[in-house]
Length: 217
Image (cartoon, rainbow, N blue to C red; front, side, top):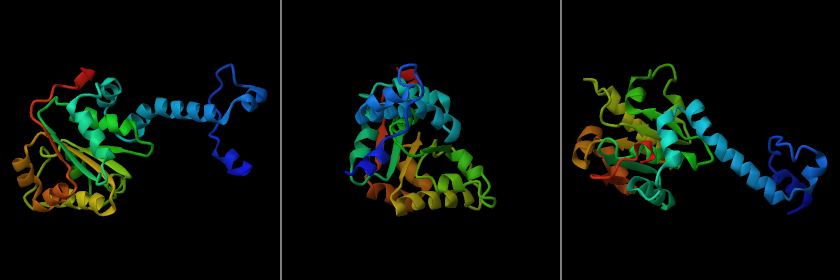
């Protein structure tokens, strides 16, 4: 790599900590240390970015920072992300199984934006003023509590969810959905097409008796 490219690859200097504020100290610090510091600062800022800019609940993000990574939900998310077909993922299980916490654990480890919205928030947002665009166009999205959202007689809510899932599926973007419904109930609720997309992506994970992750316990 040429000198110019090396200089361009150096991240911004970390905030003044009283030890590296002088130019002499900056020039004496190896590039790899700047990169390590920049990565550490990114990780430190990530929880606040999720809660303040991407709609994440503070409780879930806080619990995810202390969560036991050996718990079933988190292991499932990690294995899904490492797979070649990671696109659609459904985390199914009873309340308190740690589905949202596991999704937050994953979001904390991403470098790009991971938006958060409940299914109820999504279907009740206006479809005429662009209110849903933030979620539809997100690089990655977590759709929480799918299965308890309002369903209108005309099927507009179901159509909106179908279009959302298809958008992420078609473009290979990551979409994690959480639900309290079992597989059969879920299929009845969301319809055959969404169920087929999830099956194609090997994206169904069910946790019938998973221990609670709430509060990181």
